[in-house]
Length: 406
Image 1 (cartoon, one colour):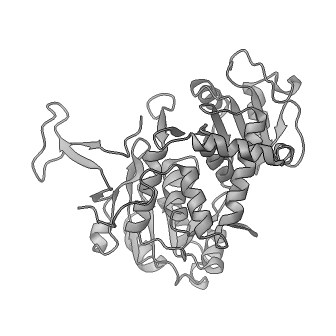
Image 2 (cartoon, rainbow, N blue to C red):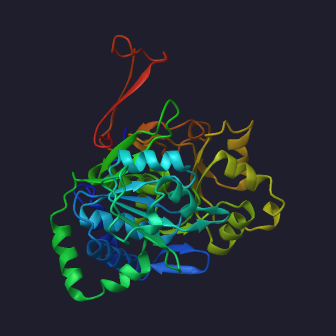
Image 3 (cartoon, rainbow, N blue to C red):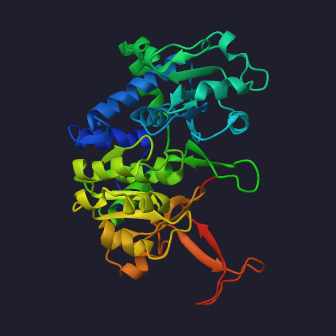
């Protein structure tokens, strides 16, 4: 049965309202660390407001869809929560998308705005974008007219140098620094409600093109607080986060369960096992969420024995690649994550729709989720008849409750 933690303080909150509350409560505590960059909750909230002013000044309105094609960096959160304040819908794009996937989602989501990085490692994102929008570099920045993408009006690049046909994210922020834009943001934010859409996350598309799940504030924000309570998250947590922000686990559940309780996300733009071990030691990481390939890479790394890991206490480890024999036991005993667990979730429900309590046995925590999240009903049914299956019989899982997306 779900644990009772009393009334959820964010039951009727928007993402912007939640962030405002935690920024006031934990203002001087670190919210995000990436490399040598450290951002407090006050600075996170300031960055979100700055981005909201910039997007509003650029023409983004309530109900517009804003596509994010960025790696794990603070600006991703600035934009995500700026959209929440403006009543816009953030569309999360996988950084590995090729041109045909990018074009499909820009069209299918009716994105009015695309915000991207210029490059990450060897990947030139503007080259890929140019394959989708061959006339981009000749366009007037902020006034794109693409025949195949009639809704797409502006391309915004998060980079140092300007690019033809594109607006610069930093330039927009500087242009919207006067107080009138902030008052407009505040007015718009007051009209946003918890049942308004906040995100579109796309499934993996294993049978065809990716499919979008429309996620409201109410689908995500209260559950972030609840999941954090179940997992014992406090303002002292240091959460190593290398999972992509483009998914429900990496982009919603982990950040929300951390931010709602004043913890700190230690971001990695790209995963590297040596860097992960360095950060676990340097930052005193208490929570690490990862997929099996990441855990195996760290367990097999030659630096494992010499790096301090005693601060680790819990984390979800998704066996998305099949794992290997004894992997969960190695995570608990060799890596040293005593309260590790295996999560269960999906894009349409949330990454932790079935949870573990940390005082469960190790054998129980090695199973993919056990207890339904707050407000969730689960049935195991015969998919042909819809009748409940008896104990010990396999069936199809049916879910009902506030996590179910549109």
